[in-house]
Length: 331
Image (cartoon, rainbow, N blue to C red; front, side, top):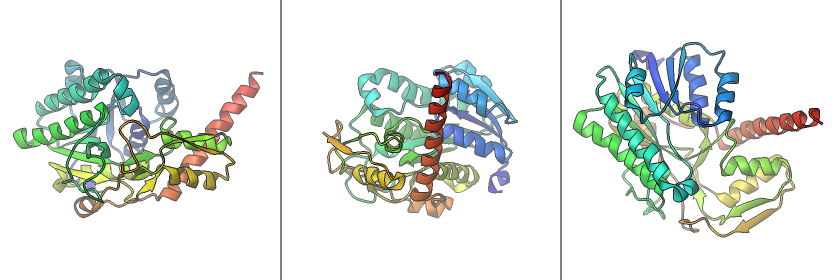
């Protein structure tokens, strides 16, 4: 495969026990990449998930700690040739409640990682998983390409702009081998929080679904497509120093997403509407132009929305059934 042509064999992933990280770890492990995983393991469920799902994987070193710890980063970066930076506080409402913690993790953590990576001349690629939330809303034009103005109205969005621009600054000033991937809204198996997972869970149990606003749109896509984009970025020399939009390439309103989920699950869930979330209106639209990623990386979606929805619904249904079974066995 192409990644071997660049002799990528030892990779560090920060924040690897999260939703995206779990898929990425399993895929990279299958193709023979030796991995180091740096994560805080702040939450009990993360540790349990790791124990059940990573214990049988080979060539993985698990490191408990923070990207803010320079000494730990130095040790973690030994013999590493590529880094994927996932460690991030990515909850928008939480960022409004506690902006300091979000900035400490997203901004200071990113700066620490970039600075320590600069000391290691063997590193060939440093990938940042950024977000469509770096773009100004409402957008100046659609679809949104990589030259669209960056602006944000939430602490989370501002912190992602900082990460994004700092990665590019390190490329311009220090020739750090960076790649920035600006992602649309992800969903998929093992995602138990977030709007889409919540909609699906309620639909499967015929519970009411509350939609905040409804007309605002997202470029929503399955997590396997982002994993594919990451693999392509590692294997493509021309990706270095550039930013790419990664998404499904289609726009859906939140209201339509909920209706599709209800139809797919044959749910009887009623839909209730509440006011738009703070900093959003009916003019908040996200549709990413992925033509640059297609041209440079060869990226195109490998899992459609419908296929991804089926995978996600089946996984969440199994989780709900298992939870009910465990509950019954205790009574």
